[in-house]
Structure formats: C-alpha cells, structure tokens
Length: 425
Image (tube, rainbow, N blue to C red; front, side, top):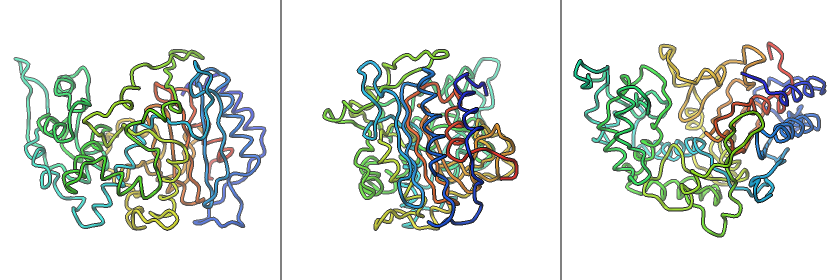
C-alpha cells in the first residue's frame, strides 16, 4: 500500500512513542494492563490529526470503549467543510456496509426462534430463488450459456458471501446484472428478489467468496419469514431495544444540519464534495436494503458494538444469546474456498455471519493489526468498527471518504490503538 507523506510522519511518531506489550489473556479485568492509556490516546490524536492536516480527509471521529467504559473519543476537521461545521459526537454519517452486521443480527433473531436453519435452501422460504442457473459464458451468437448449480443456495451462503451472486461489470454476466438493476432504489425488496432470482449466478454456491448483494437478500428473507416490512422489523428487534434512535434509513428535516458531507479524494490532498448520495437519505425510497443504506452516529453504533462484545446483551437488554454471537463470530469459510475476492486484503481473516473474523495474528507489520477472535467490518465511505473480545475493546471510526480507504487510515488507526507491532505478539 502506498504510504502518503503525512502517514510517514505518523509512523515516525508511533515509533518514538512508548508502546506497551499487548496482553494475551483470554479476558481482561479492570486491574490488568489497559490498551487505551495516555500514551495510546496521544498516538491516536496525533495520527488522526495528521490525516486531516494532509488534506486527504475532511474530518474523522473515533470512539473506543474498553471494559464497558468510554476510554477515548475525539474528532478532527469539518464534517461539512464548505459550511465550516466541525465533526463532533452528534454528526450523522453514511455507514454503507456497516449496515450489514445489523441486518445479520436481525436475521439471527429469527434463527434463535427456530424459524430457519442456516443450511436450509433459500428457496424453501423464497421460491423466487428456486430456479437459478450459473453463467458459464456465451455461445457464438452471444447468447448466455447457463448451467444448473452444483447444489442449491443456502441461507448460510447468504451470510458468508458464498451465494454466487455476480456484480456489475464489463463481462457478459456483469451486463446482465446491470440491465436487471435489482438494487434500484425504486424496487421493493420483493421486486429486488424477483429480479435477482432471475439473474444467473457467477458460480455455484459455496465455491467462492464474492462480496455482493447477499445481505440485501437477507433483509428480504427477514421480511418474508417474519411477515413484517424489513425496516420495521430491524427497528423493533434491534435498533429500538438498543436505543439506536439515530441509526436510520431516512433523516428527518430537523436533523439534516448534523448530516456530514461525503468527499471524494481525487489526488493527494485534493477532495471534491459528493453531490450524488444525499438523496438516498432525504427521501423515503421503496427499497430498504440490508447491505447498505443506514446512517448513524458514533454513539449509536457503539451501542451495537457493545452489545456484541457483551455476547448479545447491552445493559438489561438482550438481543441475541451468547452462543449465537459466538456462531456469528466464528469463521464459516472452509479451506477449499480459495477464491476470496478482496477478503485477503483485510489480513489473516475468514468470514463468519456478516463479519470478517480474525483467525491468526498478522504475518507482518504491513498487515492490519488485530487480536485473534476479533470480528469487524467497514463501509464504502471508509468507516470502520471492530469488536475485540480478548481485551473487551470496541472501536468505531467515522469518516466520509471515497474511494474506500486508499490512504492507509484504517491501518494507521489500528496501529495507534494497539501500539507497535512485533512478530509473535
């Protein structure tokens, strides 16, 4: 990964800072060495400030809890540069794919009720997906060549991105996906499912890990099994019980002055304000996606992360059983799944149920640091969260930057949190 000049300065700062050894106990008590001490706070402040000063991001905020308590919060830069509005703890941001773990939790509430098994064929509940074919190319006349999949798509495939759904692109299948336009926001979830079920797969289910619209289908499945609109279900069973009042698909007029601008980085230190995505959140569209579409604040999303690190319960509210959270945070990918799209760029990870799951320590200092057993995900606008059960630590990083983190922000933030890497830690 290319390191920008400001990032080199941050690395120099980190190398000069007094760093502690990360404890490797299974649990961490109040009396044990903490991760976020004053040295770590200084590292984090310095690192995030450097990214803003470089001009490569307009603003960033970070919130960290350890042992159930807030141990770090700070914000730098302007949530709206043109309006000179600073980033703060109440700023609302687009979280994109950090919507996915929330949808996964909603789905698993139904799993706990015995409404489905993970290895059930999807078509058992959604006949729209009962006659799917696999795209293998085109014949001489340009007609798609389709074959039967080697096995049916299961719900487990949806939760770990092995379903076989292809994406938009220049290939023959990519053009079919684009023409079908299943994720058009004017579609309902039912219409989305009908269109997606008629679109060929890129491979037989279970053969590859390919990031795509699987979690949107999970939202449809929640709607189908529960008999309740997905937006209502996730609100009633996940968001409202956790007090996540500001995690929403639609931002009302009275809150729009807290909505952060999104910026696109076009070159070193050059940001252009995005003008495309705002209407996704300022109108109520028919499509309530499971894979994207929510906005949130750092405090709201931290409630979700804290529920997970506390094995499904936050304060007196239980969303999932501990064994269900453990299942979600367990790698579901067999070694035979060798084609894994961009997943290896996340480090030594597999994939659980709507989370990446860290399965081994980093192999080098160039990889993202994380404890074995950590589970996490991020979003297209470079947002990030992780759950570190070993240290009872949760972190949420909010920024509004596209394209997705090309400046090493996530790597630098993790380094600042945990300190210097040494092989064998």
